[in-house]
Image (cartoon, rainbow, N blue to C red):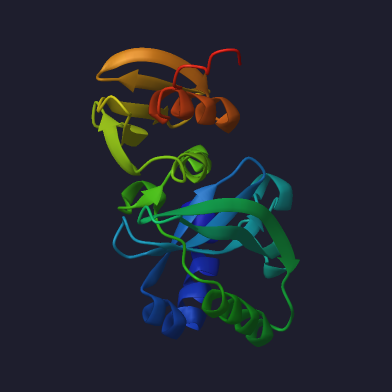
Length: 227
């Protein structure tokens, strides 16, 4: 596939070089099931990427030695940025992909791609960026827990590979409470002083709020006589 896109990549680099240099980007190709994608990524491998890309029809569809520009589309992925309360963490959420026909002739086409690259802010490489959540459920849980108790967010990698993000707080008995959100898992696990308490669906913030109240609210006093 490298030969299939070689001339198009050369044209992209030549025509977009000032903008790519200004943004610190270079091109990288990806193979999707139904298309070839040209992405614009940071030169440091752990840096941010552009939400703007170019999609080409695959060779099986064009039946040509290289893809013509009339089978290419501008591909823009919508990203939403959210500051997670006072935690110091951020959340980037991927939205929908939009495909846009590219104008002709080529100068106008590259002008449109150039404008899109400059207009759309770069998106951090989530796994490599400190204080950038991988799991949106953690942000939602933080929003529920933080008004009830002082809580912090941490992230560690199990076996150096599997990302797990945590809500950590102290209950009314001064015990350490950890709510563990493994990325991709369906349930969060709750530990009190390192002892497993229970698991709850990661999206079930109602049950999580109940547990925080159970652990952190002052114990109910004796009921008045006759009440």
